[in-house]
Image (cartoon, rainbow over all chains, first blue to last red; front, side):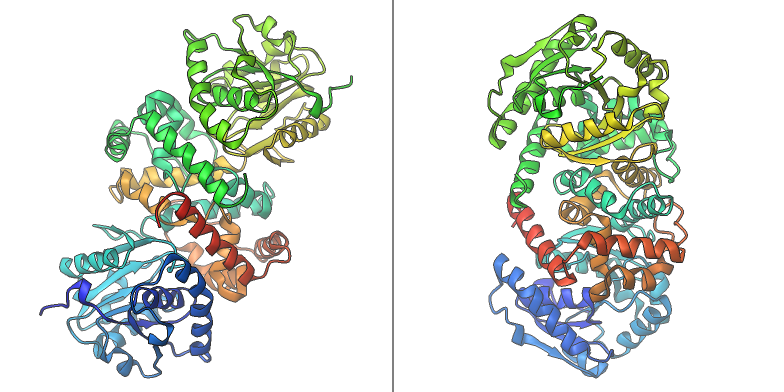
Length: 313
Length: 313
């Protein structure tokens, strides 16, 4: 079986047209693809048009690809017909495992065999979802972030029965259309970013439940605090800079004990020498040639630019 | 005892001149204050000048206050002399409880009685730190974020022996100098923002320890994913938009069960009807008159502006 090359895909079918599925449709249209959408919900076609219309000004401002046109969207009520022309399928159905298992099996039956099917699931592993498929090898997770038409990240990971080739093809395809791709070697529930933001979200809920902070305080603490750093440097490089000129090594060696402080309900990881070294080496690798001072300058310029962009300074 | 009005403060003394203390010094100088710094570490004076010099271009770009001048900084080796002219004290010593207890008591002895002493501690409660002070009523936590000269957030909270008036004065003072202030009614270890980012950080360390993600993948998952939303809307308003037109109520009612998914090692909060209502009402309050569509437009414009500001689109 030979797949179409990622750069030769012209026609994409989107299954599920809610907030995420509709966002994908808008993005694919803006990148110049012909898109067919299928969603069995009452009124889904109209809601989808509204989502695409509301995303279009932003996509236009960022620059549409050649041939991009909202008229390239077809809403198709029959699943088999919707799949007939597909060269890539993105499934964004509700987050319900039984539903996903059945839906992927249904999609599998009517989709040309050389076509990759990618699921937007925010946390299920493909191993759990592909169990009823006749051709599970082409079933991949391609997890986007809301809104999929603006946030670059897509996490790509296969299940036990997925072929590594399908995972690689999907990663290449998402890169080709301008996405920032993390290809994971291993299935982890919630993948990477959702595990991180879910930990934060759970702590936030605990704080509200305990009367320790209000909803508004929680949001303000992020938008006016650490949230201003996170588009520039992730948590690792951020803490690299908390260690002064000694960087992450100093930070872990000196603040390691405060890892045990009761600063969240999440139990601390044991800071073994191995973990300490893995983090220090990882940060050095990530920093590449950038010194602490380079990173500080990068962070400062970024924070100023972000605050200016948001009209706050 | 009558304190100077927050807007009449002219002289600030900073105790501790590392990454955080030095950042405070730079910020206070840029706002036009006379600043005295004290730090017993070998070479602290030179390191402080270097920190101020490295922050100054950013502060200049943002606009200095009238009279702002790096020449307004005095490094003073004697604590009592350093405190003599203080009208406000910001303590940013190393994060060691015994050290903080002793240092705050020492500061207390030589600081004019009407002067508020604020601690940059990233997680200790003032109740734990003020125990050896003769005048614990003027001891307050004023917790900044790195770098204090650019990140607006300061969390202000008193200890059991702190006067509510001192907490209010400190909040007013930080607001007067342009900070975004969260005044907490209750002491919680780590305050608010550090509890949230610590939960995320611990999950990140667990993932590295388990070989589930690399350091680089963790950072990329934030900078190119949820991190792009957090300077605009915090976690609460972000999830308000994950519920489509139904907002947070829909989100909690439909995705509530997925709270129990194994998406982080942090145990989920129990989504009681009370918590559900508190979150829904809090988000409505925070959104004010803004509809879901208003918030979507705000988020989209913000994400585009941030990516443009960072040179990514």
